[in-house]
Length: 300
Image (cartoon, rainbow, N blue to C red; front, side, top):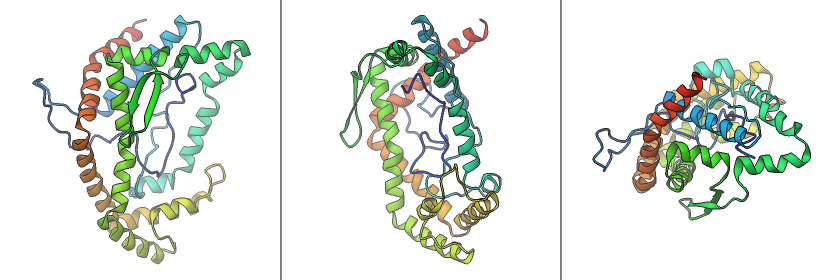
């Protein structure tokens, strides 16, 4: 149901990793003889690719007799991910740990037009709608995660059709995406196990105790938070998040985490350069097609 009932994104004030890099990665130069070296897509280009895929998905579903409403890549723009520690004091002053943004995201999910449409379908039409979106069976595409797990997906259905239209080589795209989706967790595990990060965590914890919060590390602070639908009073949440961010800066933990994140990201990208270069190349080559899709839709 992922394609049909997509909500466009989820909120995470702090988590184990991020879905995509914030365009600060050092990308290896292309080994091909192309005029432009491989690079990350910018935020605007990522929005463009997402919009084009959503429009192609919408049109494909329409051709099959169903309705799909495109959703934005980041429906709540202020949402942030802090994979290691909240380190933005200004953001923490506005959102605390992001429980307000979590609730905004949940409201969007609850009011999602695609979910409402699916629930409005007669029971006998729901199965065909799922097949139209995702294909009849989860096979046809197979990719391996870095730890060797096999991931399969249908090569049919409107989701795959939209991605094939944009990226052309769907099997290569699927393998590259599976690999790239796996790297944040691998990178995060290396960062939090590094002695430099652990030393910074000890200093951060001492700073937090001085501020009145007894947490051994940022993960413990996350675990102590109530669910976002029953959050701390806003003033308390903000005060705790601001203390975390201030301590992240003063203890050097924020700087250490950023430095180690880049270090291990570079190592992993070198290790999996085949898939990484495919990811970069296919996204860049899809940009002209994405612009055409979006432009054609704007002139309808």
